[in-house]
Length: 489
Image (cartoon, rainbow, N blue to C red; front, side):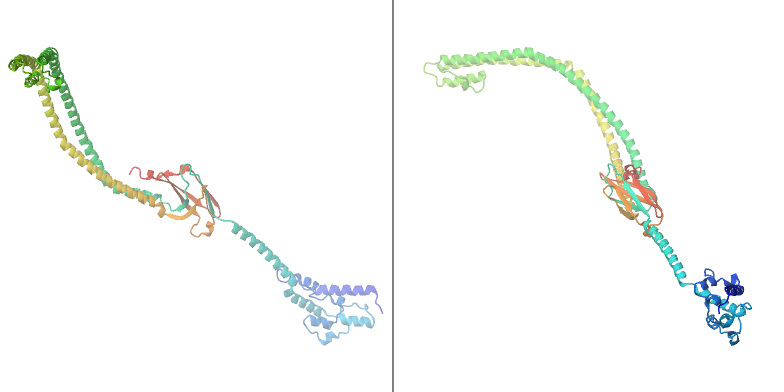
């Protein structure tokens, strides 16, 4: 027998209101933070729907709730939630027996189900939450990994060497400028005694050189006076010689012409006489062209004269000819002596002047000799000072050479790392963040090249910044010749 619809709805509403009345407060229904409320879990299948809708027996409800209802309650004759006169018949009695639950049972069931639902939050929800957290963590880790893998600390440089050869390498070095100053100071200290010796020798040489120059100037002036006196003597003698030459050119030349004429006349007479008597003579028969030679040749020819020739008379004739020649020859010698005397008289006229000049020349020569003797110790002192100066300069040069070697080796002992340079002058140094030797800070770059046996250096500081690129540009003007470092020592 069916019940009126209105009463059934009223009973359901009553049961529903009763169930709401026995639910725990909101604070007690909430589970741990982040978990779903118990009634949400119940709606997902953890709790059974209200008794009025499920149609399950109270025993099943009690069993599922985790408790065993008493027998008296299990077989209660009536449903305390049902309104009086709402249900009738056996069907209604059966329904009431199946849905009859007391407030205590309902509270116990609801509270028990809420307590059981707290640790039983949906496993899928937790999986989704953890999956999402894992995804976000993976994305974040990938992003950070990409960032940290792509970032780096590096140095990028370019060298413009100009007319100088391109360096093959760039060197990271310690700051050796202080070492250079200390080395220069030590070199200056070691050079000080040599420099003092060189200075003293130079002063002594300067004084000795001054004395030598004065002596040389004195000797030069004396030699000039001597040269003037000698020229004057030559001029005076030349005047007398010219007069003597003039005398010989006139009277002497006339005497010589007369001598030649008489000699030729006698020779011709001997030739003619030899032809007349038939014993001709030729010039080839005469070894010496002189009257005596002709007379000898004529007398020899008389030995082969024909019988018609009076040899005695011819010999007398030859002797007469020689006699005439001898008289002329005596006359010639006398005139020649007279010419010599005239020449001597001319020289005697200038003799006092010549004697005076010669005395002056002798005096000058003596003074020159004395000055040259005075120069000997000065030259010896000058030579000694020069030797001392050369020795001190040599030792100073050796000390400078040692300093130069130490200076050239100084940066090579300060090298920390080497960076190759390409032919176009570009160089780079990457992944410094992975090199534990080089932390961020200030470093020095040293470049060296050579031209004409002379090294050129470039040294300047740069900074390594973490995870940044440091750009370095080296120009030709940054290279300086090394010899500037030892100038002034």
